[in-house]
Length: 175
Image 1: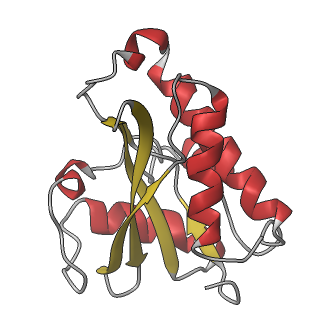
Image 2: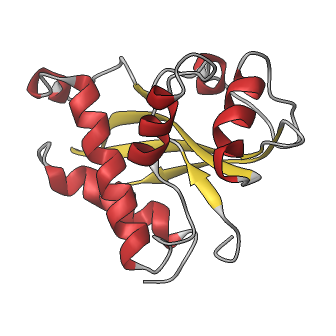
């Protein structure tokens, strides 16, 4: 994937379940997810993909500049991707058209869509789990679905989301 130009969409959802009680500490869910987007971009950029890949903030800006014809990059019709989906499954409308339009802004073909961040209890500690879907926008196909877990933590902090961003990048390019 490192040789491809890829769009990394903004994280779409923070899961509503909260067995840890950590979501009480998140006064602004949108700002929390935007900070995760920034951490994802920072890690990938530090590993040399900042020039060829397009990340959440830039896609969000482009969607706002073209709001008459484009979907808001932070509010894609991706709810159905929170459930079990399979590789080689077709994207449903209107998500297929939304992704195609946003990915096509710079002529890219592939996108990584971080669908949902879950905060879960894991043996007395907490982990953040990010569900990511890789999409071929031209074919409107799901290429793969994977989940990335953070290191276990005892408290909610920026280190938790930085850890999930780092592990996400580990799947693509070595540190």
